[in-house]
Length: 72
Length: 319
Image (cartoon, rainbow over all chains, first blue to last red; front, side, top):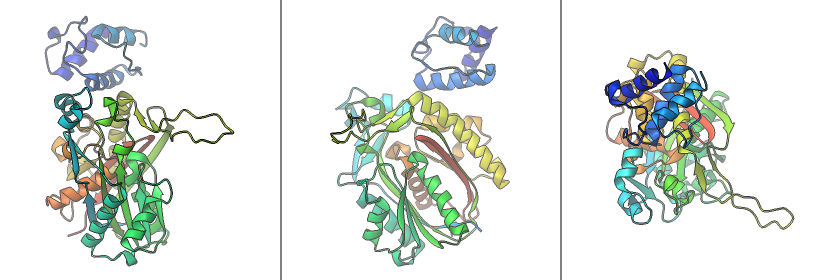
């Protein structure tokens, strides 16, 4: 559930199809820089109504999914 | 009755440093800096900030058709003056030959909005009828030039406005959250022998990601607030003059606001982030480009260390 929504929000940000995003990919592999990451985190916070701490540990899509799963 | 902006002026020091110039001394590149910030060059004061601030002030007085002797107050927004004391406002006063009270305001990058708020209070209380508000920064003197994360972002410059009684200011909101960690600069430790040395290194430190997040949400919140407070609809806005910190912040905020992205003016490509000076420099450049006309609705929005924020709505009246 969280995974699908995260990928959907990422796909919307990148303006691509959700199928093009694999959870094991890093933000770097998705061609997203540190400021893209911040903006995506802001969009995720809004969508899930949570507060996410932005740390160096959030490297892959899976890292973000796991961080959100702990909060919802 | 609030206030009217009756003159604008700006000044950028002659020395211009490009991203390529910085790439020669730090491990970075034009592409890296430009894609993450929108900045390609910035100006740097070679002989201190005061002369740049004085030039901007003089230009604003000429534009307003006013003499320094007619001023009731000089306010100067700065966090990077040449002197801790006297205030930069006093140095400007001496240089232009004014004799009114003069003081500095430190609200970091929100300083120009704080200056407008203080000025509107002075008008409202009847203490002043003509105020010179200068915003001037020498950010190049605050950053650690051995580190690439912060030094590439900033630039030096000054902007000024002459304020008189009028009805331009339709709404203003300033705020602060009292949070130092994400953006701060401590003074270097003194040599007082009776106390342990403090840790301050005298450099500006910034958590870029935290500030980015704060900036986008603060801009959206404050602009929505002042629009509602002034009873102005988003489609009535002619231009947004945002603090020039990072083009990506503006794009992110524009996406979340009902105002067309092309209405967000920006000049940071050639100025970098000039802190409090960014909005009055942008305003003066927009006027010189004949963008600003009487009757237009302008939105200003800023955010900075403190963490401070400010936004206002101006109905431009000067022909």
